[in-house]
Image 1 (cartoon, rainbow, N blue to C red):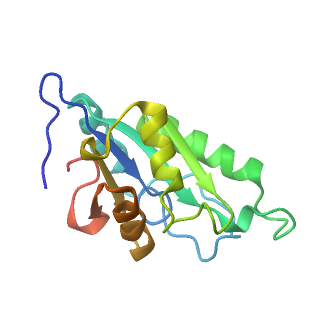
Image 2 (tube, rainbow, N blue to C red):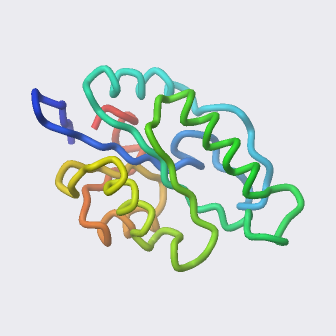
Image 3 (cartoon, rainbow, N blue to C red):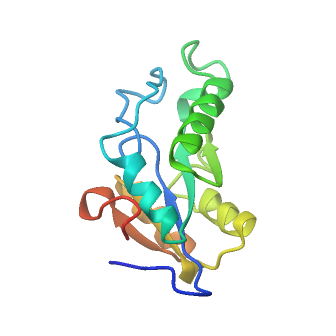
Length: 153
C-alpha cells in the first residue's frame, strides 16, 4: 500500500507507540525507554517530506491511577511528547480505560477530527490485532508495521 500526498490530497498516518515506534515494553506498567526503533525517525521524516501528517495513538492501561508507581499519566505524556518531537507528529492520544483503549476507535476518531481528516484519508499503522480492530471500527485503512515501512504507506 503506497500513498503519496498529491497536490491537494491529504494523508494522515496514525501510529501505535509500543512495538511500532518504540521497543515493545514487557508490560503496560513498565518504565519507558527514550529510544525509537531503528529507522523510525528517518522514515517518518520522509513521510513528512511527502506531505503526510503524523499522529500517535496508544493504549497505556498501566498509567491508571494507583496501578503502578513506575508509570504515571505524567510519564506517558512525557514519553509521547518526546516521541512526537522526534518523529514530527502533530498530535497524540493515549487511553487507560477499556472504553477508550483499542480495539475501540475513540482515539483514532478524535485524532481525525482534531487534525481535520476523513477516514478515507487516514491509515493506522500498528503491531497488534487490537490495532487492526480499532482501524476497522473507525473505518480507516490499517497496515501492520512489519508489512510496511513506517511512513512509507
